[in-house]
Image (cartoon, rainbow, N blue to C red; front, side, top):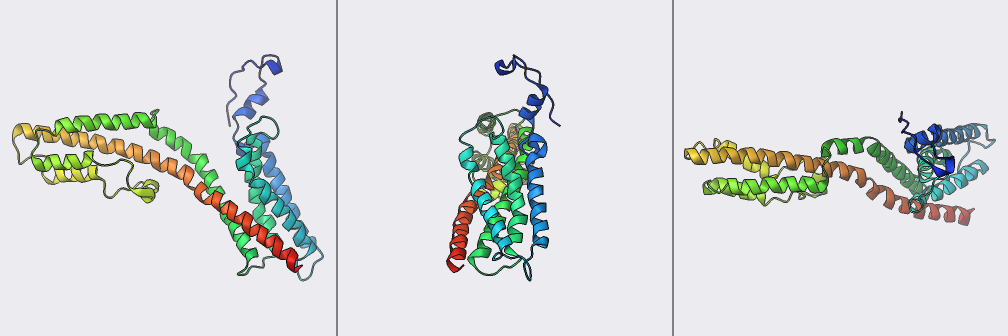
Length: 302
């Protein structure tokens, strides 16, 4: 449960913020107004289910019955309204229709669509535009659920991984290690120096979307350099001064790999926070198109 912050001045409330307002300011959108929109969504779902079994339609309610048209109209209006969240984000206002309230409604009413749209179909599916619209709706909802779970868990992991450092500071730390590596590798024989050179030439952001989201970099040049030093026995085949230099370089390579790991975890978490939008947003536009085709075809053949 969110803690209540220290009271602050507020001219509109006589210089003091009430405890209820403070809690409201710090509660998440899922808990907004004591789960108001969850309750509304549950009422809609229960009403839809009761109506499905109570409707006097034979052999059962379907998309072509009065009950199906009622649920279809409700579902279509909800889909169009839910798709306006992106526009709503550009007009942040407080109050009952604040962005937090709108987002809470977006989540719970979006989940309610699973029940409303499924009952609208009458559980009749086929290879047609009607089922396509339903499938796209489920894809949009599924990607939204992933987004909710990502935003519920990943920001804390991102904060823990950063350890109060910004992305720029992490890059500066990597560059500092690279400068030390470059200087420390100067006394080494050509073979060792080449390994260090490949590690220094490595782009920390290379690897593609698959590597970024999985966090696995099988062609990591820094790891390859460490493996090369280990295979050579840490400089056992060179003189004492060069062996000490090789040990220092190996230690710096370990630090570089650790810093790379932190940066790659940062990129992975950021990627997971954003990648669902690359499905959610395009699928929403595709859904609106399929929904339009569904409605037009229904009224054309009605």
